Image (cartoon, rainbow, N blue to C red; front, side, top):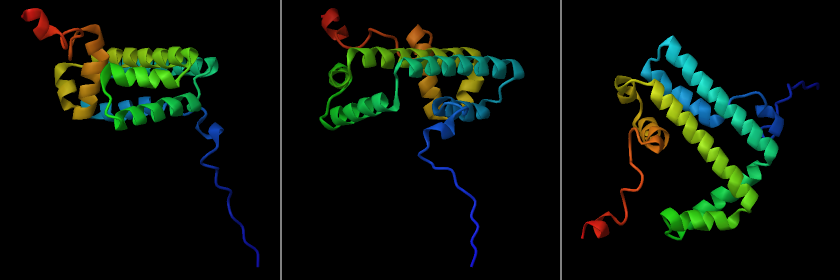
Length: 165
């Protein structure tokens, strides 16, 4: 008996995703399909995504590996389970990472916020309203909100009551 089988690629193979888009970018682009973007808007969004992917590639070369991401995710999960939030949670996560890893993660977060800000700036109010709620919230709070255009304004939370008294 002769059996012939095609080789399936190993799903754990790290090189398998080489050349494919970043999952964060892919999710964002998929959710933007509902916004019915013009060709000009699509070009601007793709430009922002390409800049983000270039930054991610640069950070990976500097040492931002999946191991660093896993350490951060595990520390975040442990902090959440311990009931920590906000600054306490961030401090607990930072304890798990070296200073170099913290800097790389911070650069990654800044690049992601910049991409979201760029994408949010391209969309009209009607297009934002057409997006799924999760995407709309991300673009409003993390993207444009960081620049103070939409979403939460920084520095208006804790201590406001105390100042008013």
